[in-house]
Length: 326
Ligand SMILES: NC(=O)c1ccc[n+]([C@@H]2O[C@H](COP(=O)([O-])OP(=O)(O)OC[C@H]3O[C@@H](n4cnc5c(N)ncnc54)[C@H](OP(=O)(O)O)[C@@H]3O)[C@@H](O)[C@H]2O)c1
Image (cartoon, rainbow, N blue to C red; front, side, top):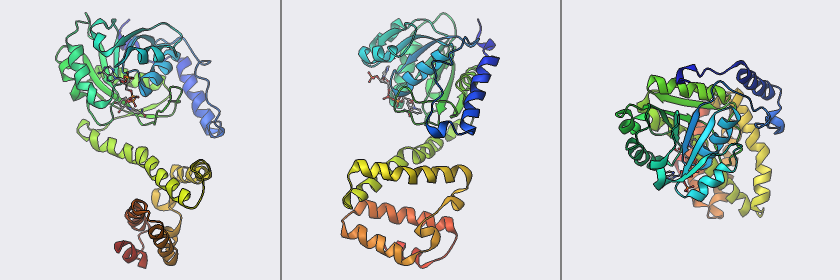
């Protein structure tokens, strides 16, 4: 089987279509997940895969790819017991290896490097010492790095690329359907990356490889930094006397409605609240309360982000001067 015969089959397309229809009719909104295992199908795309980095994304990809007919041949983690834990999620048996055993990696058509970013160069150097007998495709999943980091492998004839899902993965069952994936690299690697994305029910897009750090910083703003901001809001509600658990719970519908607004509207039109309305006295009360409770970090963030909100409204109000004085 060659890597060039990997187009997804009709069944795979039906599965992706079903996932999209489910989202359109709001099934996802009710938190009913598409049952990954039950939609398991025999895919023409079945190829041998090694996953180096059996952590959050590596394990999620192993499960999702196996469910689409890819054969997961091996899983590698820093510590072998972590690779074993990841392998326990799979139906078929996979070889489990510790990082130092990478020299015994079984042959594969595709090697996915899902280690932390800082380990990718190290893994590429180790892999370049192997003689795979053929020229596999190797893709890493970093958002900030381009495929250039895999140049030691490219020089040995491997086909190099990167495939980054714009999704936040915290547990192995995180659904990947509907995600957008940034792919780049050599043509053969990009072709396989796009096939994988299609098989996983996602959509691929590309940017200039040199822009990956900025692209990834935007992803961090949307996921990591929004989470950090949510944590600040929890701290403020705890200062009001609520428990963290209750605070988390009561903020969920507010956050969900904001995300919903952003799905359908540009930020300038999605913005609600005191800045959008220009409620000068309310903003003053907010600032006084933050100072009274000695919430210095929250005050700093409130003022900085408030300035961005005011910019979005395109209105000159007294709030601008008040925030400048923060
Ligand atoms: N999680 C996300 O939401 C997400 C989303 C998009 C992209 N990514 C990208 O995916 C990659 C992995 O992220 P993650 O969140 O899945 O990280 P993670 O949960 O920390 O998993 C990293 C895995 O790599 C293993 N590892 C570390 N050094 C290694 C080495 N030298 N050789 C082999 N395995 C090694 C670790 O082994 P141990 O378990 O033994 O420590 C662990 O299994 C990163 O490039 C990240 O940017 C992540």
